Length: 344
Image (cartoon, rainbow, N blue to C red):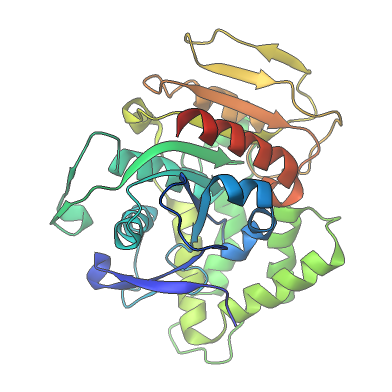
């Protein structure tokens, strides 16, 4: 049985949004929203739930994206903007007035969308006709974001030139395989897809129990015709998403970007970029990386685009995998405690 609960929110005509929290909500603590990576679930953050030092200092609430985990809506088409709106409505429904947001890979660009839609000091959000023509009065605010192993561009030639994967090529295969004119009641992702996701996310040499767990979880989450349709739309969102470069000017909260260090990057510290914005390449002792998706070269360029954030820093970790909170929970959790403690 899933470890999630659901809450109904109004976006897209109604969404049953699934979320997981290891402990009852404590309004005296700051809250960290967690957003999972592509075709995973809120179980991605098991190691964070188990860290008492972390949960003693903050509430953890992992919300499963549209098309992921146990979140369900009748609308077959949705975008990452819809997930960002849904997450803010979940915060409202749970009585969370302020929160930090951490997101892994695709979750990273969800954190930015949430910061844009729910900035501090804004109590009214007008969502235009492209986003359902609703006027929402809200109190929820995003006070800091923590993207992990992400990119804020679309799947562009620019990112490929900087050493990122070819997302258009790599995701088109699943999109095509999961497109069908007829119902597919016996569908489930095959093991080759599961291993593709596990290899790029957790590393080819991840423990066998990790591989077994995520094979079972992915196949269970996406079984049947409904599962195929959700997986297909999630893949289309990943491949065809819009870039955020022009919007990063409007992010006004602190940003801490965690990323795996590229093996060709010299170990050094670069400071003074745009005043308080810094690129820090000093964490960890091991060289090499298993992150085969988004490069640190791209992250170094994009962190400089947060020109109106009071603080925007890139912290790199040696030897980690693309899903950094799973491969290096100690480094991620310690950074979270420091960041949330500073800005809460």
